[in-house]
Picture 1 (cartoon, helix red, strand yellow):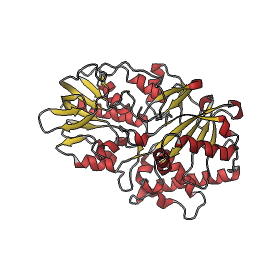
Picture 2: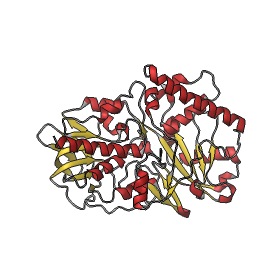
Picture 3: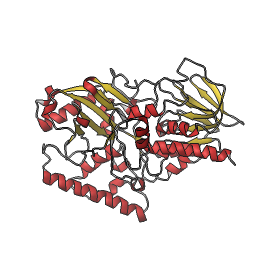
Picture 4: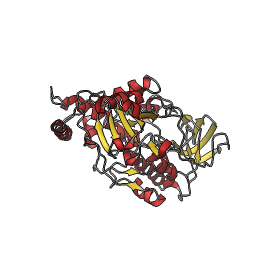
Length: 435
């Protein structure tokens, strides 16, 4: 299953209207939407009731894109992809969850806590957090009046916390600071209110898309926009459309896994300037839950960028959720199945004691760099490429429209940013047709 280590089963089953191999594709559709992630589903929902026929074409055998919830033994819920309702006071998935009957856990995340000293005493933690906050203030100030440049330029030379700040970047950007645009970081909007969907963000997004017209197992490889109608070449044949919304990952566009005729070099170049970074997670069963407090936090090695961060018993579950990002996550993925879990167990045992090797059992892990339909986790702008988000989002000839988290000006890298981009693309189609 893409994005997952072997042996995992999906907790939400979607009854699809046009399943892979179950029914032929229509010969023509009004609006073809490529990708059944949050952006594509948002576009499909926004077009319902408009009088336009719309069909979502999804390469995977499931909906949700980079959102996926799996159910693990001992009632452990694992969001393999997005797991937090970021900026929850502005996140449109919050009212959607309430409408669909999904309970929301409004406890704030423990990210700035450290449940055990474990080589990171309170005085050091306070010094680190102060330097981290100063760094992001420097980013915001620098972006106001200066040309774009790598965020690593704003690290204080010789500061003892630089490696740890770089580790934080790998979690939030999926990359180290030398690959992150200062202008892009400053543009991101974060209200610092973060909640969780109790039964999983991926499950919520799958339920949200349940009423949409979707064709699974349908990989689009070419969009020919040379004629009066758009022709889409897919793994299940061809169909034509009046308009198309493209909502796939930037890595797929940059690598031209979907090609355009005539070519669209501006889109390919913009996608290349907005690559997907990598943020992976691993879930470890905790044999003696009472040994650790619920919703605790543990940071890894403070002097290294290649380190994990650990959520202890998230939502009270009998597990530890580990986070790895950037170059380190890629190295662990490339090392093969089990490498993420082993790295987490080794680090936790080093922090809390060797007895934890016997108390922790690998349950599941993500492998987003090896997911053929993502090739990464979420986008970041390379230095000098913050403006590529607007370039990627711009429509072409009133017939090709683009959505996805990478096209969001302020909520990129999030599911709600993707959702809003889908709404925006649908509105662009309706506005064009109203002319």
